[in-house]
Length: 546
Image (cartoon, rainbow, N blue to C red; front, side):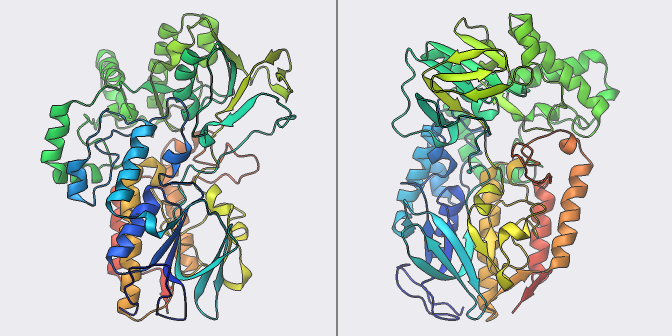
């Protein structure tokens, strides 16, 4: 290898041109932590920049009441270290934010990761210097770091968004976004609370907030299909069983389209080919089992709208059974295709609207007019409250990348490159930006999978790519425009064979005003992995290597 191993990433590293470190990584969530660990084990010097005060990424920032993962704990965990798998004990089927954050901190301690992470340091810009072949990263502490490689590990759901509502700065009470919940928490006891948004964060937070506050008003734009999580304490025998065969368990999950759920019953028949009682039985079993794989009850629910209708009707019937007020139930009942938006899982979400201290406002019928010093006004009513919570989601997949001033060859910025929507090769690289990688970027399976599995696959591919370059004495790797073009067509073609593009979702960027509508994630994890492996085996076809 042409680099020199370094145990101190603060010191200069020898290699092609004088530079501070081999690799700069942005973000210290699960992607950034594993990227740091794996690069170090290969002898590379690394510096990670993190805006927060500690590791954890999305699980550091999203501390809102009820925050919980929608992938089962035994699957939503690193697989790269067998001892780590055996030592860590999960307590619930679906881990809560505090437990996941504790796990992230444990990993950072175990592998001494914090020594190479600069906390409370935000990356503001990164420029590729064509003359030296180096990246220069400028950070909020007024320093610049030079590196051979630049990796964005900023996560898919990390750039919060606020709605464009007049008077948003005028409210005199407490204002908070679920994605930036303060460490000290928010006092909700005996408070009048409003929450805007009923996406995944809102669905998780609303039942817990309703139990804490005096009154809760929920402002909903679009009702959600949500499936019970059926969360429970993790059975000790179940945990011991999985740990006794973790390699086989992981391998089975890696072979699944979403890289999870290998032990949940799957069916390969059409919903049209079974009698009504069998259809209802399967849906009922999936509802009682809980979790995001409700749609796997039949093989055509996500590709055939006439099949999808049966799943829609089943969930709508459940809502009408649970919610006692028929008018409230009607407001909570979605009309769109089920599954074209990320399916939410909940704990007592619909039941919460039976509480006497909870009120639902449908802003599609009565829009919010403005926020005032004491609350907010819709077109038809006025509300006063003490706490205003925005559960309005994220600029998904691209937001955290586009918020950094990244400049590649010939002065091309990432904002200019993606002005008509994000375009990548393999979801990992972008033509015009040599030696830059994105972990779980647009054009990769990312949010349609168990994220940690996708993260590990990306980190390992990137590390192997860098090592391959050094073994050959090459200095840069850059995706070819024609490879990008073919890949974008491939991602779109896969999506177009399904119902996913059939409604406005954050998969398309539809939750961000003005954002170009492009279906960003790629469907199908195993096929994606095969393609990535094929690219590497064919000496990184689709790239120019110099």
